[in-house]
Length: 527
Ligand SMILES: *[C@@H]1O[C@H](CO)[C@@H](O)[C@H](O)[C@H]1NC(C)=O
Ligand SMILES: *[C@@H]1O[C@H](CO)[C@@H](O)[C@H](O)[C@H]1NC(C)=O
Ligand SMILES: *[C@@H]1O[C@H](CO)[C@@H](O)[C@H](O)[C@H]1NC(C)=O
Ligand SMILES: *[C@@H]1O[C@H](CO)[C@@H](O)[C@H](O)[C@H]1NC(C)=O
Ligand SMILES: *[C@@H]1O[C@H](CO)[C@@H](O)[C@H](O)[C@H]1NC(C)=O
Ligand SMILES: *[C@@H]1O[C@H](CO)[C@@H](O)[C@H](O)[C@H]1NC(C)=O
Ligand SMILES: *[C@@H]1O[C@H](CO)[C@@H](O)[C@H](O)[C@H]1NC(C)=O
Ligand SMILES: *[C@@H]1O[C@H](CO)[C@@H](O)[C@H](O)[C@H]1NC(C)=O
Ligand SMILES: *[C@@H]1O[C@H](CO)[C@@H](O)[C@H](O)[C@H]1NC(C)=O
Ligand SMILES: *[C@@H]1O[C@H](CO)[C@@H](O)[C@H](O)[C@H]1NC(C)=O
Ligand SMILES: *[C@@H]1O[C@H](CO)[C@@H](O)[C@H](O)[C@H]1NC(C)=O
Ligand SMILES: *[C@@H]1O[C@H](CO)[C@@H](O)[C@H](O)[C@H]1NC(C)=O
Image (cartoon, rainbow, N blue to C red; front, side, top):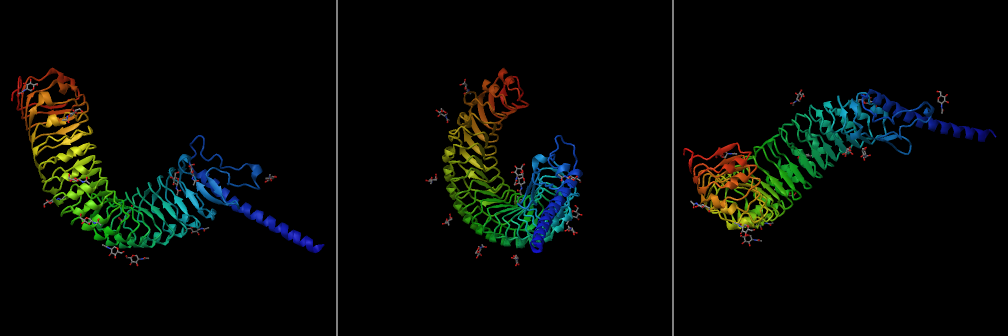
């Protein structure tokens, strides 16, 4: 009799003890959540956290598991807090009792109005895997205690006002696979210890005030697919170890102060799709090995100090869609192999020292929309094959030494909008050529030897906003068609052989604010 009672008592006791334990665990969580709630500004109607409350009759079993944004495990412990976006929370994390949530694995407070600092106590969330505090107004430094979150896989603190430097202790969170800190005011350099984060596949530190050189240890991150360090103040050269990042798909280092030459090891990045190094001080030549980047779709190296020639093996990058090499000192000729790049949509080679002529193979690039060859020392005739580029919308050939007739069927596709061939030695009846380009909106023909009767050859251009045909040999009379260009703002026909009267219809071009008709033979105008 006594024995069973004892067993029964013991059993009851352990049940009571168990439920007391559960109750006190969730009581602690409830209290912590309510305390934090009461610290938040409560000026919204309806309050986003109305479900966060306990009525008196719930006092034994009070549990936050049904509250909005809260998720629990089977034992009733809070494992997820997801109050992103719509919650519109205003306040700080100062009253958030991190140590009350020993089971929390997911904390997402992104897209709110949280102010103040990230408290060091955040390190008490010892089971946290996902931390997202992005898009708030958090300031101050990233606490080094964040390194206590040794199970963290995702850390996103993007779009805040965080300053100070990236704590080197971050290197201890070896479970991290995503570290996103972009759009903050972080300064100092990338800690060498970043090289310990060998599970990282996404590292985005762009748009901060980071400086120093890119640590060689970054080459240890063999799982990295995305490396974004753009819009900072990094200097020194790009470490050759970057070639070890075999999984890298996107590399963006644009807008920094990087110098030195492109490491040839970059050729080992055979999975690279996007390479953006524009606006730095990179020098030296484009390495031959670049042709091995078979997966590359975008290559932006513009606004650097690159010299040397365009390697012919560039024609091996068969998936390339965008090639931007403008504003460098690249010399030599355009290799005819460029015609192999069948996917190319944009070719920007302006502001370089290119010489020689345009290879006819360019006409094979049937998807090309933008062709920029301006401000070089290119010469010779433009090949007829350019007429095959039926998707062309912008053609910039200005300031070169091109010559010959420009009578190509450039309007076959009818998509041409921007056409600038100014400051060359072109001849021929260009206006006749352009007559079918009905979408033209900016046209620069000035300072060539073009000719033709503008009365007959000027077409209808409803979008035309700028036309400069000055310093040529056009003749005839100003067509009344000029009045049918409702967007025309700038018209310069000075220094030609145009005669006759100024048609009154020109007054219909109501946007016109810059008109230069000087140095012609117009009646009623001093020339
Ligand atoms: C809640 O607590 C009060 C006293 O604190 C008690 O009188 C009441 O019975 C409790 N309610 C429930 C449902 O247990
Ligand atoms: C978090 O909450 C948002 C908005 O309420 C919801 O769209 C999203 O699916 C939730 N995410 C998770 C992981 O619960
Ligand atoms: C947090 O929520 C935002 C918005 O709903 C979402 O885009 C983001 O992926 C979430 N973060 C994590 C780590 O799940
Ligand atoms: C929480 O974190 C702070 C700062 O790291 C530490 O001092 C404190 O002891 C921790 N509290 C608990 C209950 O773990
Ligand atoms: C970083 O910024 C803080 C203030 O925001 C400043 O005190 C510190 O000196 C800066 N450190 C570096 C390395 O520029
Ligand atoms: C990381 O890279 C550096 C320099 O490349 C090397 O010396 C170091 O041994 C590497 N560390 C780890 C943990 O792989
Ligand atoms: C590319 O990688 C291979 C093997 O990982 C290595 O032997 C070679 O030196 C690397 N090439 C360059 C140019 O760094
Ligand atoms: C190109 O070279 C010229 C002279 O060699 C130099 O004056 C100019 O600054 C260089 N341009 C760039 C972008 O490096
Ligand atoms: C790359 O291009 C060069 C020159 O155009 C050519 O000789 C070579 O065979 C190509 N290599 C590969 C791997 O396609
Ligand atoms: C590319 O263009 C050249 C020159 O116009 C031409 O001879 C060649 O057949 C073209 N190749 C392809 C594959 O279209
Ligand atoms: C302009 O288009 C018409 C009709 O589509 C065509 O017959 C003519 O050859 C074209 N002219 C030029 C110069 O492209
Ligand atoms: C230009 O063309 C118009 C219309 O066809 C014609 O009347 C005029 O004589 C031509 N002007 C010259 C100088 O050929």
